[in-house]
Image 1 (cartoon, rainbow over the protein chains, first blue to last red):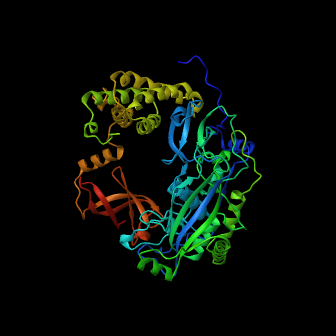
Image 2: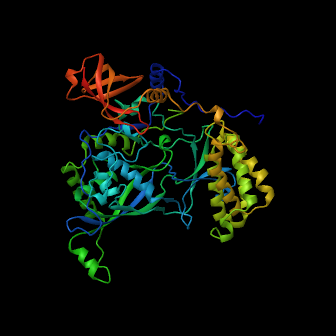
Image 3: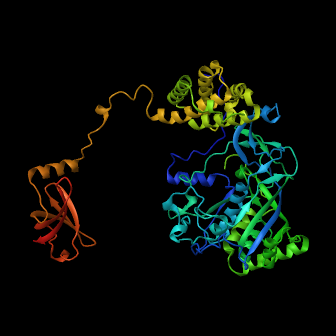
Length: 364
Length: 219
């Protein structure tokens, strides 16, 4: 046994043994939560047969978006491995949680992490199912259960998000490449011990026994710094680090692509930023997106690409032409009612960036 | 790195023994198997980074975890887990001068075995368990057994039953012997009295000869 007493822990609210009335009072006494639950649309998910991958449909949109992601508050997407500081060239830190680095030692955000982040916002603003959840089956609102397409039985109808991001048995229509940092090196941050969500102790997670909404964390002006007793240093991408990536899409409709632009924060009416990686409650992971170019293929170009040995002249759009195209698709999405306005408005209040919100102090 | 080397695929008897020892010791000390998983994850990355020197880095890592466990752990128990893992690895693996690949395999198996030993500790699973196991025969099964022994039943046989309850959805609960049977009586529901004795017909039997379903015949 060690003779040194352990350092004091942060005061985590212990609600386990409190009565419902007292629990309610404890909740009220705590600081405001750094997240919000975005309610589900009034109408259930609208299921449709997806476009498929067997051919490029002439009336649909195909191509690549080239994205630049700028870190606004420290970003950490974990590998899950804690190493010694000396392992990554920093002898002053005993232990550190690592991020993925590519062979050139550049920080990398896995495409899957980006995809999940974009998907969650896309799901929230469309009439989509709840599939990426730990909620129990009985707690899912009626008709919001996970889409389960069964191609062999001819059952292919899925919700808007599953159509383009994919579902079990169904490959989606967009692909995310890993985002690679443009500069070499990394920063070291600190992540206080974060504790698990406690849906069993917080009634706000449920309404009449069903999940109340989708959980999104607010952006804050900065991530909280050291000062907590418990926690671990983390390898981070610091503010102003820039990542680049490409997003390939095929067989999208104009409103689907328009919604994707809205989710990526390209609608001036809805200036939202992505919240990526770990440490969301303490303000980490805010990234703004810029679409730098789009390689959009449509109609005749498709045929040219197949029949020519060398690819035809570049179809990349940039600058004003790109902006016009994006705004055109965004307007199409709004006009078609594909995007649920109440949900988008609610989400804007949470994901709006820039913001003047301070990160929470202590345990919330 | 030669992780796919044929010689490394299997463990020797001595190495198996080490895996069992580590698993047993950690399970008895109630160590969190997820913490052992994280240690294994480090060893895997260390092998990629340091090759043959990964073993020494690994034991250095375990000491660092113990030293800094208080601040990085999420609960006061975490430091105890680190101490247990460090002690088990140092006592059992370090003195054997194993290479990192072998340590990785031994620990991988130890983590799997830990889950097993948590349920069935080593050396204790041979003891007879019968005395502590409660009787598998429930009251209902005993009542069925008693009913079968008193008389033999056949499909179509008319027997006497007592109406216990009339339920919603045209269902009636009959008492036959000590057993209750709830049957749907769509056609005859209105003719069945709310209580008292009635005649029922046996519609089907179970494999053991006991009654499965009955139908109302007359009051």
